Image (cartoon, rainbow, N blue to C red):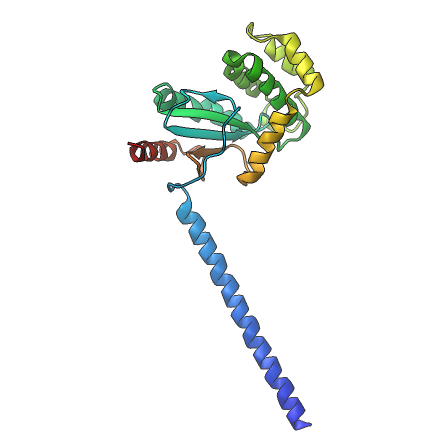
Length: 231
């Protein structure tokens, strides 16, 4: 009887030791992963999303690619477009150093999809009017406290398009009704999943994700580093 009790006690001790070792390993591995993620942020060697077929601003052969994953229903994307984007265009895009691409994110469901379909239509048929139309959609956002209210409709998008003579409004209406560019929107969804995008805006410089997309000094630093590396 004593031998059985002694054996059971030993088994319990060994089990406790084993569980303790496993727990220590999990904690160490988690901390190592966190450290690795922090170290990789903003460093070189990142993978750049494919921008084939995406709306692009700037020279196609520009050495640095900046990608925005944005949602037309996202207030922060609107603010980024009004504050950081113009600086980026003036400092780097106009000089041929950076090309800027936009990838649609659909975090707000049907309205995000509808706005993206309209933007894709304009990009395909009237690319010269795309960025003005893009900006005009964002400007239609209601006040912050009302931003979750439904406001993106076919009719609203058509009214926005009418402000730009270069846009074929009838073509846009047809494309929206038929969801003509749904495959392009689905391609964007795939990129969002592939690159683990979980917030908007997400800004990438040659594949390196900005922790704070509003930190323009960090954006400049990454661009300059990439330009130097490309010499």
